[in-house]
Amino acid sequence: MRNEFFPLFYSFNFYLFGLLALASAIAFVTRKSPVAAAMWLVVTMFSLAALYVMLDAQFVGIMQVLVYAGAIMVVFLFVVMLLNLGRPSDAGDIRGKWPRIAAGLVGLALVAELMALARNALDLRLTVSPVPAVVTEPGGIIASIAAPLFKEYLLAFELTSILLLAAIIGAVTLAKKRS
Image 1 (cartoon, helix red, strand yellow):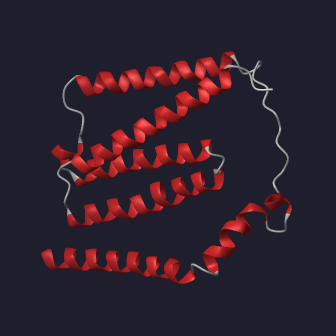
Image 2 (image 1 turned 45 degrees about the vertical axis):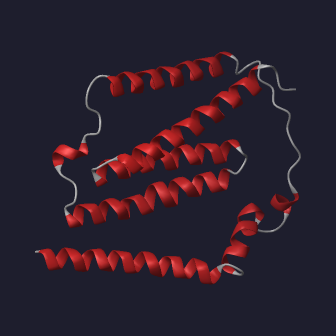
């Protein structure tokens, strides 16, 4: 059975990652530097991935990190560097002592959370839920996600990939016209 620690731990993490996602999304929108904005968007994506994992959607959380925080952010930064939009002085987002103090407090909160989890790890006994029917089918949980993606939503999936390709070609064309 779950003890008293688990609901408190879960609630704390949910609010922590939710507030981190909101704060970093606001920071993303308010940045003047495109490089700094892209880095804040990566923090938002990682926070959303943590929320997905907490909601027992591990595959969606991993795809959030691999696809959005990984591949698409590399494309964004590539375009920013290609167009030379970022200035070296604008890349640093932390000015003054208050953002550094806030970052230190968040780091201390995460370290305290890890220590509390390690201390209560032996007492924390989770009930093992039965395996869902989706996992026991051939193909497992990935097939249940991939089947609609490549059947009902194939057109939208392919149009999105063509749109991303057109955006990259447009960025390269704009960069060549400048030089």
